[in-house]
Amino acid sequence: MSESDDLQELGLLTGTRKASQNSPSPWIIRAIKLALCSVAVSVFLVTIVHLKRAPSRQQVLDRLFPASQRRTWAQYAPYAPVAEARGPPEGCTVSQVNILQRHGARFPTAGAAARILAALSKIQSATSFNDPNLEFLRNYEYALGTDDMVPYGAEESFDSGVEAYWRYQHLVSDQILPFIRSDKSQRDVDSAWNWTAGFSTASRHKLKPVVSFIVDAAARNNTLDGSQCPGAGRGEEQTDQWLATHYPQVTARLNANAPGAELTDENTYNLISLCPFETVAYLKKSPWCTLFESIPNAFDGFEYTGDLDKFYKTGYGQYLGPVQGVGYMNELVARLTESPVRDQTQTNHSVDDFPYTFPLNRTLYLDFSHDNQMIAIFSAMGLFRQPQPLDPTEPDPDRTWRVSAMVPFAGRMVVERLNCSQSGREARSQKMVRILVQDQVQPLEFCGASENGLCTLDAFVDSQAYARNKGEGDWEKCFE
Ligand SMILES: *[C@@H]1O[C@H](CO)[C@@H](O)[C@H](O)[C@H]1NC(C)=O
Ligand SMILES: *[C@@H]1O[C@H](CO)[C@@H](O)[C@H](O)[C@H]1NC(C)=O
Ligand SMILES: *[C@@H]1O[C@H](CO)[C@@H](O)[C@H](O)[C@H]1NC(C)=O
Ligand SMILES: *[C@@H]1O[C@H](CO)[C@@H](O)[C@H](O)[C@H]1NC(C)=O
Ligand SMILES: *[C@@H]1O[C@H](CO)[C@@H](O)[C@H](O)[C@H]1NC(C)=O
Image (cartoon, rainbow, N blue to C red; front, side, top):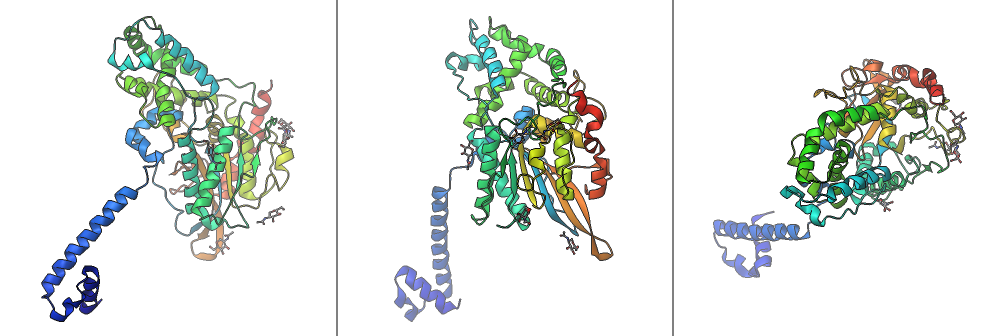
């Protein structure tokens, strides 16, 4: 803009167009301009502040509890990335993606709710409350639902759809939409649809993916939910051992301050769980959080209870845990290699043998599942293997088995198939596999991965002998 244009503008703005006839000295013009500019900027900023949307649920929660603190909530921790996302290494492009995702934040399951209510009725029957942090119980009402997702969980699922679009939009088009499967549970179905809404919104509604397949309510063979191995244990022994080791002091303190409650260590655990459950449901800090923050070690013990529970329920600590993830692993291998599913465990052949219910020609696959099932799948594959089983009385502070980082609400494993050009031979390329869990690249030592977490597809498939040999006899043991 020339000086005279500037003047014209000033004239228009101030209504003193004629001023240019008798030009004021340039510094005055600059001063006026500066003043007008600052007025404009202030008006702009004030408007922004006023128009600014209410903070997202994510922001509200982050203000209440930073992600580092939420780690102690174990499997009830909301989604948080564990590492900064890294794109594929140089020379590689992503050619297929498989996302296995847990539903978003939810209410307690019916079973957990019953245990919570049992503990609540005990503490509410106390003859007095001798701790100011217990005062809230005088007019406390438990009002959580059961099993279903909470609005915060819907937002987590929506956001993950947005993120998937931004990362992998090059893989999809209205001809090749994501193929989305969900377990039949309502919270998984809701998560899946919220994911599609996020994905579609991010594409400015150019792409409209739908939930392609929901497991039939009557289906016994289901790779997205466990409980199909009647012979497997539940891992309760180890968590009970830990509760008995760690919680007596916490429980004694509660009982002393709430005479007559006569809580057990298990009751204590269930009352602590109200902190994450109420916080994600109401997006306000639950009074249970304040109470247990005032009692040393209450939350650390809570985290390890979750870690032990998963390790011994469907993880490496459960003899028949990993086999429950075999069916899914064989489906994954089928997709990665674009060849029919070969499995004799819990896949449903009436579904997997047909291209409309189990296509092999897509590029982005989504599966909505549950924490216990995802742990079985990780363990069938070889992720998060521990040097020795988790000690039920003494946590190893350096363990990599932390369920808050493995299966938080809306937690996800992303299996990428990449096409990498081989150095020196531009024309040739190699299929590779890379796996991210909460954005953290997994080491994949079991298929000889390089430092950047890449295995060749062949090496990855070879490494899955346990799944490909139908659990090496373990599946039959489920029914013995
Ligand atoms: C994938 O296969 C199905 C069934 O054979 C076919 O109808 C569809 O057009 C194919 N899609 C693509 C993107 O090739
Ligand atoms: C998202 O999930 C909520 C349940 O939390 C559900 O009521 C809603 O219908 C879902 N949204 C979509 C687009 O399906
Ligand atoms: C297999 O899937 C079909 C279609 O969803 C369902 O009707 C059937 O019950 C399933 N079979 C088993 C054994 O799970
Ligand atoms: C369901 O699983 C059982 C046990 O592995 C298997 O024998 C049966 O064929 C499966 N049913 C279907 C429909 O795939
Ligand atoms: C893989 O990359 C090479 C070049 O590096 C390219 O020629 C080839 O078409 C790509 N293949 C796929 C399946 O994307």
